[in-house]
Figure 1: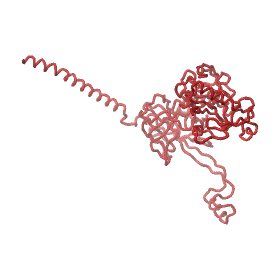
Figure 2 (figure 1 turned 90 degrees about the vertical axis):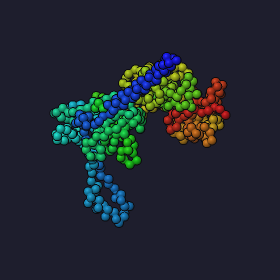
Figure 3 (figure 1 turned 180 degrees about the vertical axis):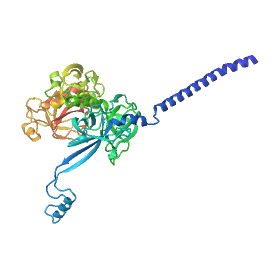
Figure 4 (figure 1 turned 120 degrees about the horizontal axis):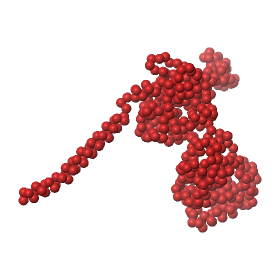
Length: 494
């Protein structure tokens, strides 16, 4: 009896002991992770600041502002007080003479021979640029004049150059794609004209788009204020992973939402400015729009909202390579295309003159085309009109919530349309319909339906009937407004 009880006790305690060991191991693992986290958290940024601060500079620009001239803006012209206010303004040194204004910003040295990166808006229109260096180690502050090597307003980047007999301390670019949300970063610059200053924070978000097609901003809560523009954002290895450019603020001061242009964008721009004094971006030669979820059902062979829909193909590389209006670009030069922003950035970052493979979805099948890229800077604004035939039918028709009529010569003149434009003009839109909700308005011109050209009202009816016969629930229309094309999917269900 005793032996049996002992044996039972031993068997019962074994799982308990294993459980205790497992709990102990889990506790040790948590402790190790906590210690590792604290090891990654810097106790101080002082050593890092000492190491890289000599490469960070203040930038002072001055600009001559032309005389305003004309009557005194404070009082109406001819007022008895006009002479009084003019004399007062002249006494304050603000007469009709040209004035010199100053602005402050930041920058950083990227080579020992004096190349300096900053924001374009810091030096734009400046007549004189002065660089202020802080060498550290008790050495005096030095100043050198700078010249503009090149600028890129699209990414708000400028490259400057100073001449010096002594090698300058400089910093290197890091890989911004390796930065993760939560990583420590440090900003340096000249906030609010207070001189050299350091602030620290973390990466709050990545791949932010603010205003342009080439935007790729790192968002950070490191304090960035006016005057920090053009300064560097560092990782903990002392590499520049961003150029501080903008803040989001209701009062003009830092509220912890700052934006730095990612270094992987900046390096490509700087390399081109250094070589050519200007940017040379690839140009595909298409007009595109995002594929929206409601368009997916209307596009044969597409299962999700992805790719870039081609709305127009003017004369250029894409047309020569066989790209057609209505194609959906799914892959460019070996990389998948998620949306229009992805495609624009990939094309812009590709070498001018390179022949690339472009995978498009057309009529439910994928096709691979070869396109030799042109240069965007040379082609911007050149969008020739497509050659199309004359319309025939003058009758109006109500369809899909729209009152439509074929394009006539009178309409071309009234709507300022191209002489060869064909299609259906939207005469009116029923405000209770889906067409109105999706933005169609009187004066729009529908040039395609179901990715086929329209020349008459009967053409549209044929596209509607064909789509219904194929079991489709919506029809894809190509709509032009003031010359700008976009695709709209309208439901066929009554």
